[in-house]
Image (cartoon, rainbow, N blue to C red; front, side):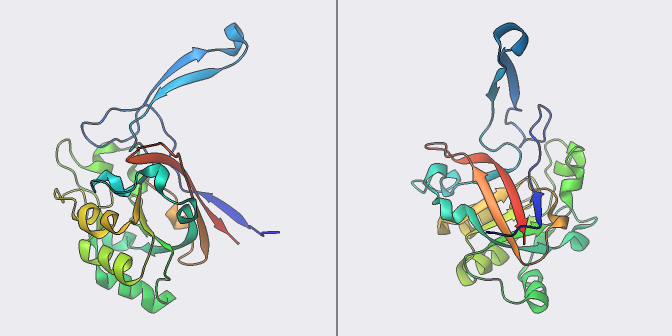
Length: 231
């Protein structure tokens, strides 16, 4: 029997006013039937694939790459490490996680193990209900991310299967070329997990990550219920 002491929800609830990438539609919900009138309750929902806490498939930026349903399920259940850079992001909305940040983590906790996911805690999830603080002023995105060199170190040299973050996107908000998406993770078959919350509750090492993404056939991404299990 598997022993689990804590289950930590890393998922932001989806509401009609959730922070969205500029220009993409917010979620909408339409009640189709009600218990009072029809005997049961159900809604029709309209969701952008990249809504809230979501998983990017390689096809999001790489032509012909794997779509969301093609990601093997065993790559959605894995060990996770948390690299906490919240102190360096404080007051620095354009901060990009560096190779030196990875080195500091490894000096304290050992080398990032092959086959795990790396989750980056910037502390930015605390601003999720304040869209300007979370994303930056309208038309001028600013939030922390990971630099391309650090992403390549983790994917190519450490062999991680995915990188997650508690901001709107894996690339820093002010990086318009999306270099981590285009060169650092997705072309190597690694996934991106964006919009996480509660990473301060997850230890640096020792957690099991479960990414329950919907297998949307042909999809570029999927909203996901993400949990960390602590034994």
